[in-house]
Image (cartoon, rainbow, N blue to C red; front, side):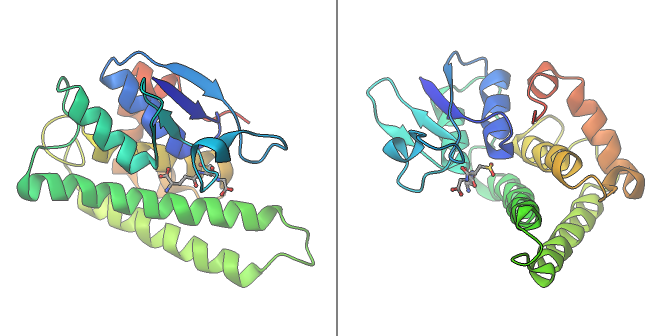
Length: 202
Ligand code: GSF
């Protein structure tokens, strides 16, 4: 298996953590959709990473599909409950965390545009989504040790990747000062090598 990946992508980080937690071997192939001459669109018509290339050369995207595939093919250390409300709860956490990521990536990319082209109202709109999502995550986590159930799940992995990306690209959003329970969760996640080894790098 090969993972087409960039080291700054939080969606890639999610998959690298899933692979590490499930102890699945793979080759990391570094490529970035933002670099001229990149090969990403050859494997994903949307031109986005992550892409997983299976041994029969078929390709999987996006990160939610890849995470689900990996959890199904390797039944050890289940990260998504098999069925019912439990499964939906984890998928809902993932949707919330990924939605906050989408808004964070959009706000960051907009901020990179030149002052004349940049839309402050669009940045504000995305930042409002991030703020709301962080509040919802903190409220839903409450006093629980994990986002869902009694052990690490894809919900924690997705939330952790979002928190890490906000710190990396939008450091003025001081979520860890505002939400002690999210800070505690992130600290606990960072004690795992799957998280510590995949901190986003510029
Ligand atoms: C999002 C992937 C994505 O936006 C997923 O895999 O879950 N829903 C997808 N990847 C970005 C890199 S990053 O910001 O993580 C990407 O490849 N963007 C390139 C582009 O042209 O939009």
